[in-house]
Length: 158
Image 1 (cartoon, helix red, strand yellow):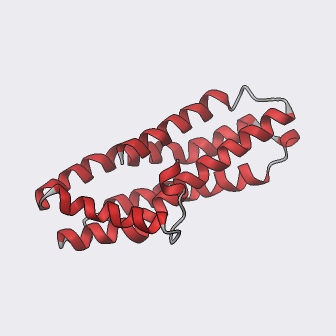
Image 2 (cartoon, one colour):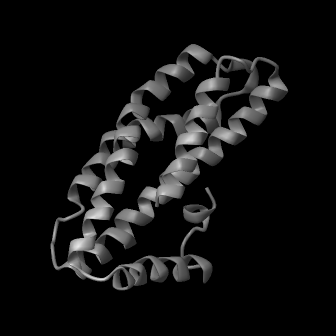
């Protein structure tokens, strides 16, 4: 999970470093494709966590609501991430506005960054519920579903 979150941090850093630099229509178009990939990765990752991973963690620990803080954190950046997705999929390169783009970024990145940082200690604290191998089974079950095509592979690719 640290690896996936680190990828999201690196993607966000790349976006923040480049959003003012792109100006040629062909560069803006390429930048928007990159932003679309980042959007899909973050959105899909958190969807799979809520739908598959977190319920299995709660079943494993016997602690209903254990991951609720993480779900609430997802909701804190959900609307801004949605606006980000709408923008990067709809803006025409010649209409790209770095100021408007930055406002959208600022609407969700602080909550997203907080979540990405907070979730790791939450997962590490699961150690008190038993052996790591049992917990790893949850992750491997999710991985098998993705590899079998039952879930979107973006969860692992980004």
